[in-house]
Image (cartoon, rainbow, N blue to C red; front, side, top):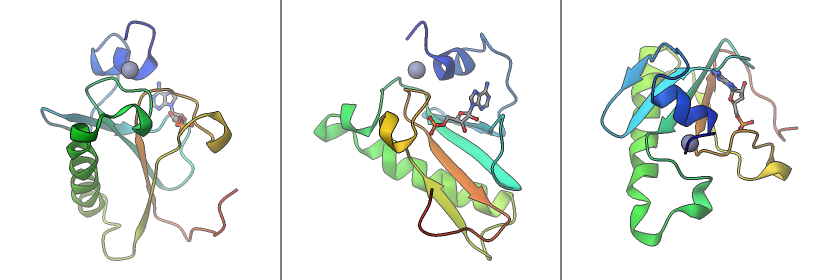
Length: 114
Ligand code: AMP
Ligand code: ZN
C-alpha cells in the first residue's frame, strides 16, 4: 500500500536496518523502544490487521511466531522469557495499520498491560 509506513520500510523507501529478513517477513528495531529488546516482526504482504486475513491466510501468523522464537534466541531473551504483542485497531493501541508483532524482552513485564 503506497501510503503505509511499514510498506515503505519493506520497499526500502524509508531506510531501515533489518535484523532479519526472509521471503515472508522483515524484522527491525522499534524506533521508540519500550524495553531493552523491542523489535517488530512484519509480514511483507500488506494486511491492515489480523481480521483482514482470510481463512487460508493464517499460516503467516505461525511463521511470525517461529521467527519470534528465533529472534528471542538471537537477542538472548529465550531463557528468561519475552512478550509477543499484536495490537488490532485503535482501541487496542494500533497506530500502524499493517500487521506487526512486537517482541519485547530484557526486563520484568507487568500484567495487566496498560
Ligand atoms: P502499534 O502501536 O502496535 O501499531 O506499533 C507501531 C510501532 O511502530 C510503535 O511501537 C512505533 O514506535 C513503531 N514505529 C513507528 N515508526 C517506526 C519506524 N520508522 N521504524 C521503526 N519503528 C517504528
Ligand atoms: Zn503496509
